[in-house]
Length: 275
Image (cartoon, rainbow, N blue to C red; front, side, top):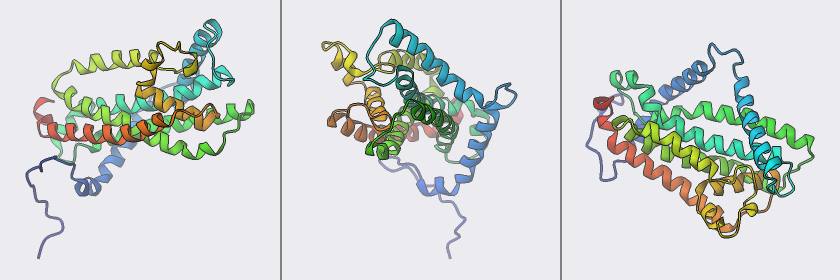
């Protein structure tokens, strides 16, 4: 009779897909890692979880002054601060998912070296703190929407879809970056710099319609634009993005996550050697 607790190690298949059954059995590891990540992040801080509110507020305030007051760019009739805050929340969700997952293996190098478990659980568990930050920030956005009398329409029902797709997009890129960061620490220097450039190259604090016509195509092929526009359409009732953008993010999110997972799995066996 087969022993249900016996683990049989087999060679990877052609695509080297993750061992989902093994990952499910080890889900307690992901839960513990997520709990530790949240506790450690705000331990020995004066303001604690208040940083989750202060960071997007400060960022939205600076962008409001620069793009709303000084540059006077359009926000499609939505108060500039609310418009910018919604964009900041969507961006922080993507940036956080990518950044936390990409650095997760190096941050947990002692655990990776000593304990055997599905390595994919490490970047996945790092998403817990990102989701917590988003929920706290989104509650603030809801309060401001009530104050300014902004009532979303039926498209608010699609908001969970955009949230999941944005996280899939960020984690997909993050998994690929995590695999190469283990071998090449240069990734840790290039990635923050690239993300900063990408943030300024995205319509974070102004409407896409404010971009000159001859440059708009550069913004339209930017995947960040897709989820920013979709997120604000669902929450603030701005103009509906083109259908092709909604389809593009619906395809890009799962596809990038799948490809990132394959890259991660391909390099997984070498992690302990390089770390």
